[in-house]
Length: 410
Image (cartoon, rainbow, N blue to C red):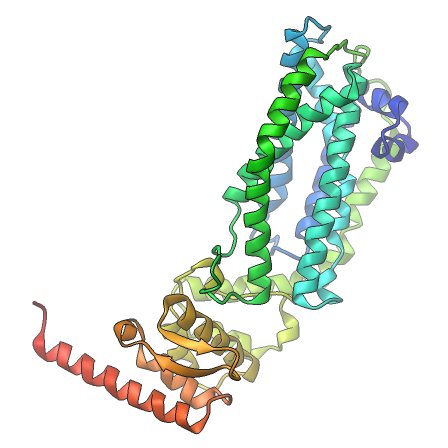
């Protein structure tokens, strides 16, 4: 292997593909690149001192994906009476090739959220993901075509079939905001964009699946394959490539030093809120500036995701109990408004300056007065008539609570 092979491989060079496949050192270099790609994905998305296991996701997922894709091609070649290598030896060659695609993921490190508005940053990240996915599909098609000496178009259908199933499974398992088809949930623009992207990914994935199945069936009839990789060996270590891989790994020290303090603050606050130490969460947030947290951050409970812990009532009580920074109060006021809509507690008309227009009596039992008192105290958007309406609602709720306490359990 040569240092230039790393770049030539990413554009589909046949000679680079075969040289990498023929060297077992691709496994060592590849694992270093996988770890560097994991840092690119997570240096500003997780507090790695506590959430270090996210760095292993890329390794475990890539091992599994490479195995399934290689096994699919291997079985199809054998079905067509092609020449295939010993399964495990061939898999190791393909795994090294699979890992050598990791530099593609470095572009995920681009901090769009620091330059763009939240919705634009999310859209840029989704577009980047789509571009890398297309590039990876094209490269895997080229790699399998070269190492098995197979025609490209049947191989493309096999790769697309595998990729489509993987995307459907990933989109189904990935946490995402609740689907809001009729608009009744009133997601934030960021959550709405993520929800739509997740829903459309699954819809298009399911609709296109028959196409890839039919194409794969037709492609199988035209598949001819013969393994092209000579006996892989360790040989002399490619020092230049090893050094470059180590440098690529160590190069993330700078970005980590910049982004990890924000992630530490995020992690500490989320742990407090989720572990029952709710008053300490807003207190810690208020003790430092908003800029000390990640640019796009939605502390728990994430309303768009249907989270219930901690309850907004306990957070409201903490905010009412002691002075909090204005940005903290504003953040949880917005969450409370969003929860009103999600549960149908209050019809909050965003088209009338974000004020309460109507209360739904059938849902009174799910509203705690402390949240309404938080709005009375801090919500500057309320009109005088809204305040009077909320005060009457609080009286109603407290009277209802007294009556329930007097009656006792049935």
